Image 1 (cartoon, rainbow, N blue to C red):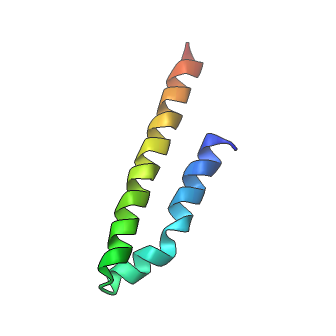
Image 2: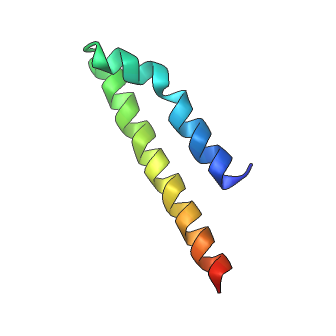
Length: 55
């Protein structure tokens, strides 16, 4: 899977939990925070890939 597609999928998958967390569901908030950490890591992988392709 393309790195950008992975990033997009990670963000989209947590949409339902995000809405639940906004409604006060603490467990959903925990899942969103974990998903955002995964998004951050995926974005960092894309950044590294772009830096490597620049050389």
